[in-house]
Image 1 (cartoon, rainbow, N blue to C red):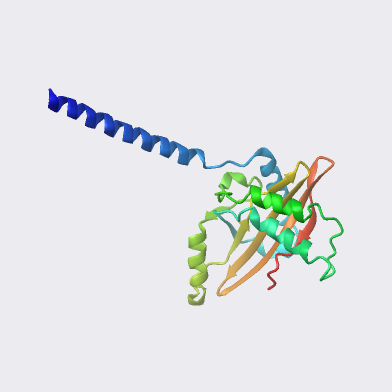
Image 2 (cartoon, rainbow, N blue to C red; image 1 turned 60 degrees about the vertical axis):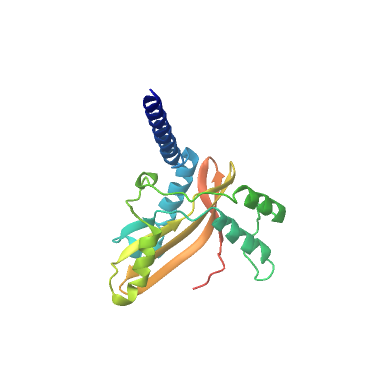
Length: 210
């Protein structure tokens, strides 16, 4: 009888552990975040307009890869802060600043523990993309000198940092691999809702000039 009781306790314990693992797995699955309808609208409106510019003609025939791990929303906020801080030093053409230093600080605190978002192919409605993990991208960069990289377009994006119902920031980087040469364009854009449509309404340099 004693042995049977011990066996029942062991079975019960193992069962509990299994259930905890299931719960943990469920939690991991649950935190796989989805974009909101507004975020989908903002990111796709931006890409539809931005990638039609003459600057990106060279990408038309390239396969486009999106870095799966998004830039954190601290990135566009930092770009905005950099421009705001030095606006009087370099004669910025930006005439309207939607956040002051206290508001910047408050938002920073709110997104301190932000998780990295993992893009999905389905997030992009009018652009055919494949996903590329950042670690694989890093390996491709290291292999450039060996001419082992293909000619492809690389997109690196932040989720929209929604300031309010009419304003959002996106950090955007695009580059193309061609043999050992990798060129990039990078900035943060302010998307503003005007007449119920999201439009590009200001650009902020990220302080990295190349």
